[in-house]
Image 1 (cartoon, one colour):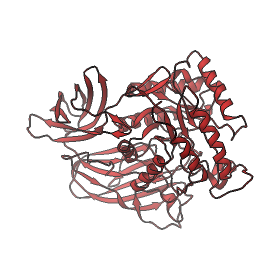
Image 2 (cartoon, helix red, strand yellow; image 1 turned 120 degrees about the vertical axis):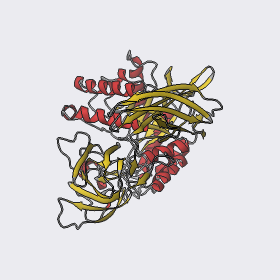
Image 3 (cartoon, rainbow, N blue to C red; image 1 turned 180 degrees about the horizontal axis):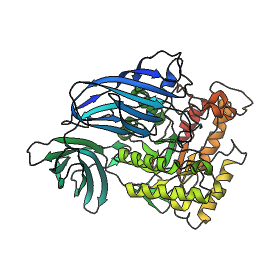
Length: 558
C-alpha cells in the first residue's frame, strides 16, 4: 500500500498500483501502452523530454462509498470516473483523494489526466534546478468507506513532570444521507483512551480530542527509534462493533528551541545532514521502496543523521523509513528560488498555502520530522516577500505548534524575514561561488546574525554548503568540476561549520547528482546539478570518503 505498516484492519483497501494504460495526448508518434504506476513518463523510451498532458486509465470494481487516494501526481491532475469529472489537484508532492458516494456496483473506469507543462497557472512547478516530472509518481489506493469514517488522526506527544502524555485529535466525517451519533476511542500500548461522542448531520464533520498520560513509554531516540501504533476506532449509532478504524504511528519525543540550540528530548542536537532530491535516472521521482532504503543506507554509512527534503514534501514511505531508522528530517513545502515577480503571481500564495496544509495534515505524525521549512531561497529580501513568508509561517504554526519553523536563506545581510523563524538557516557556498575562505565567511555571517536584535539566542543552521564535481573527472591540478577539487572544498567547508561554536549543524548540498530542467543547461554541465557526493546512479565520488571521515568524528549530541 502507501505506507510501510498496516493502517487498517476494518476498512477495506485495494492497491491500484500496477499497470495503467498511458496515452500522451500531444505526441502522436508514441503509441498508447500499459505502464507501471507509480512511475513518471520521462523514464519511458520516447517520452524522456515530453511536456504536455497524458491520460492514465484503468478499470476497477467497487460499489457504495469509495475513496481513491493519490499520494502524488505531477504536476496537475484531473480525475474522471466513468467519464465524469471527479476532482482536480495541483502539486506533484502532496496527496489528495477523490470521494465517490453511492457508486453503483460493477466495473468502472478511472482516468487521470496528468499535466507537467509550465504555465502562469503553475507557480511552484517552474523550470528549476531540478527536474519536474510528469505522471502518477506515488501510490494509489482504493478504500471502501462507511457513512461515517475517520478522516485523520493527529498525535502530539509531550513530556510532563509525571511522564509522557499523548494528545490525540481525530477528525470524523459524515458522508451519509442522514444524521449519525459517533463515538471514538484509541488504543496505545495496552491503554484505551476515550475521545468522546458527537452528533453529526449529513455532510458534517467534527474533531474529537483527548489527552492522557501513557505508561511504560520508551522515548524515541535516533539510536533506538521506538515507535508506537495508535489504533483509533469509530463506532456509530450505538453499535457494539466499530465501523471504521485508522492506525497511525508515533514516537515519544519533544523538539524545542532554547538558548541557541535545538533540543531533542532536552538534548542539544548536532545536525550532520544531506539534502536529497527524489530523483533517479531509472525511476525519475517515482523511486521504489528498495531505492529509497538504499539511499538511506548510504546516508547513514557516510555518517549523516539527517535529511532535508529539498525542496518539497517527500513520499510517505520514505518518511516511514526515516522514522524506523532514526534519521532526523527537515520537511519542506514546495518552492525554490522564486523572485518577487514570480511570487506576485495571484496563484502563488493560494497554491503555497494549499501545499503547506496538505503537507502538515498528511505528515504530522512522523516523529523523525523535527522542523518544518518553507520557501527555499525566495524573495525574502523584499517587503512583498516578507508578507508571503509571514502568512505561510502563520499557517504552519496554526497547523502544528509542536515543531520549530525555518526557511533557507541565501540573502546574507539583506534578508528581511529572519525574525519570523525559530531557527536561522543559511545556504552558503564559500570557495565555490566566491573565493572567501569558509571560516572567514562563516564568522562574518554568524556575527551579523548575533548582532541583529532578532538573531541572538536563536539556533543557527547551515542548510546548504557544497561544491560540484563530475563523476570520473580526475586531475592532479584539482580544477573546478574535478572530484579532487570537490573533496578539498568540502573538507574546508565542513570543518569550519562543525568546529564552530554556536552552530547547530549542516545539511550538505547534496546527496546525489540530479537532472535539472533543460533551461538551466548553461550553469549545469550534463544538464545536472553535479554537487552530489555520489553521482545520479549512487556511485561514490572522492568526496564521499571525505564527508564520511568528517561526519563520523562528530556525535549526534553537542
